[in-house]
View 1: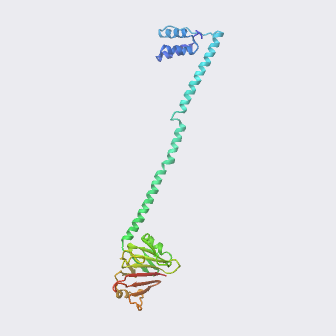
View 2 (view 1 turned 90 degrees about the vertical axis):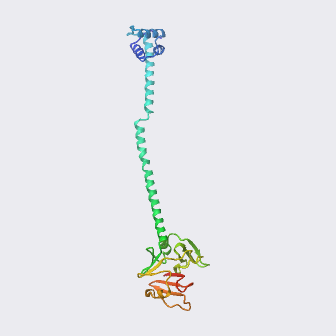
View 3 (view 1 turned 90 degrees about the horizontal axis):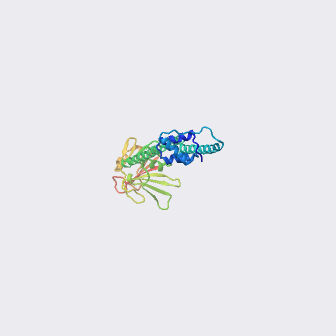
Length: 291
């Protein structure tokens, strides 16, 4: 400890007094700088009462050693204060580096959700449109068009190779699927339209059958066919009688054999069979063979 007072000691004590610090804190600060506690108390009292405090300008050898020690202590304090301020600056939330990183992170995810929403809406809209189209096709009367290049259902060209796909594109999935006995023939029933597809896996003749009586079971549909068949502008309805049917010259009907109830005709590559099984005035089944 020393009684020597430096200008820096006076400046420190004066600043602490201006900050309205208690005397004991100011004395402790001066003591920490190497001043004798008694001398430190005197300095504080002199400053509070406006008395001049004499400072030492020339240091003796012994006091020089003490001042060097106090200088090292003051330097250590300054270093600690600087480290503390540096750590506070680095941990401050507004540091430029962190702000820039956060600024670039947001756009990476901001576009994902809207994009997913757009894709989801498009998928849902597509499903709704397909369902509405099929519902409209199911509710509207079915029209089969006989044309020189073949049969068309709902605008789809039907051939022996694509009959299942073409009808499904127009009417949707079949209501039921049945196998006829031990044969390779599979019946795809469209009950609401009264239509069946007889498909043979062995490469035989595929055909479309219209059930006008709704006979049900494995070889019939649950609802009667109520649509129409058109050929060269002429309309064939499910209640057509044999006399009106055979008057359509384009179908080239031949007289039935021993069974007077079945009439067979042809239109280009399509073969047609009208079977009057329950009534001589209206057909029970209408078959169109796809060759």
